[in-house]
Length: 592
Ligand code: FES
Ligand code: MG
Image 1: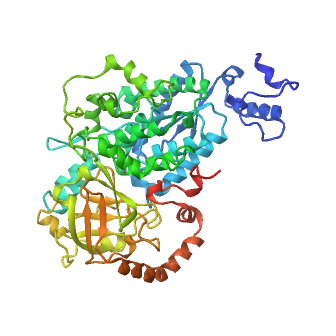
Image 2: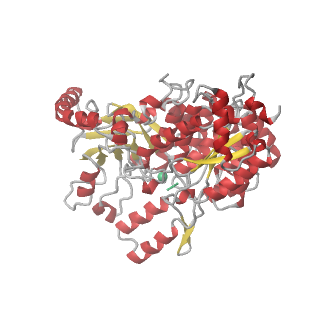
Image 3: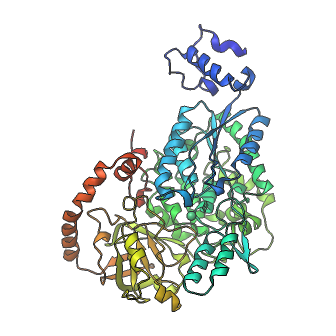
């Protein structure tokens, strides 16, 4: 067709590719397209360029986001891939969310980022969209938004940072941030050393270099079939990372041409594969919340992928990857050991090989095609199925009268195995401020057998479900050598943290009907990982009476949330509980 056929008023505009998408703004579709071309030509594009498949590239660079510092280079490489393959690449911004610069929490902003992503993908005339993300909340936000927008999407990960070094030992953000800080608190290392360590924990740009949330979500995204397998682990500063970006550009043009949408690609089997990988890598507990939120954006998967699915897959899946915090190594080691390609070959008997990927090949076909490239050299990072690090269920889902809607723990990161079946008296902190005030009080009545309980850090409570669930060991016990205790909260913890820590207790404490909200200091709590049981050893009538009494007390707070202004008001009124992904209820696929 001649390039100016767009202006033939005798023919309706029927194509929905490129600039021809969604031409309803002025009633007159020809005029709408004419105006679009006026404005995009201001950027210097020719009719030839504008006749190509348009690939949007989401730019999440921010001066406050070191995990995304390589985004400009990735955009350049992705553009090269798009344009060498006959497409037109157009970048545009969305918000960027970094863990440390997102007050009150990055999780508070995840849903906002997902809305930004969804609406900008929907609003703009693009045939496919490369979504560049990396830091913990960004990849989930982009998948949630991209699945809801349901145009062809291609996640592109910024990649992990390299490890640093302290006195001859490798260190890396952020498992070693926590270990070393705990050692400093316990007086084991001095001010000079902790200052030196501070300089080395994040020695390059990129995402945290252990199996924290960012790395977990990168592996899970690859397992979902949404990106090249090497894209999960190539370091942020590597040239491999740039080649993956170029490849993503090429894939985007192909995907734009066939119009393959995420809701077509993703099925129950894709999520079962993702959860298998999550369990095998000893992935972050946060990924449980994110995966539920992501699945609940898909109309065919809401209510299909649940906490129960995480638990069922876990029982069949051993821990194979020896990375911090469950093991000893860094993402860099995982990449050099063969990364996701090697892991998926090891996990093959447990995978659903018929699951589709964005390339149009099934996962089985992807693995078959890579058979000759299958890494088989000796290494210690990715274990074979026959010799796992932990037999099954690195992530465990618990239920009981204390968590009727569930709770999650990373059993593989427990430091004292005896705590995996434990009964002890609760020491209750009503919220983070209360914790900060009393945890190191030398007079706090606490022993190594106490159960530390932190309330008020759930989705609504703080708000945004902060990563405060790794309650510090009280200083007097830490000083006496105690390294782990049973700790309970309705919040999250960093994917880089470890210990016997029960998280995401649901319903969260601030909700008037929450049994977790009525726990008192001295109550006995039993946690049995083997039977998946989290129990408050208090008679039912007492629990019910306490809940009734508390309901009266919190009516003021509930009313205040109804009146709260701004995004925080929207958040507190709309966020659902951890077992549903802590998404806004109105964003899930339940709505029409
Ligand atoms: Fe961005 Fe850890 S702070 S990945
Ligand atoms: Mg994190």
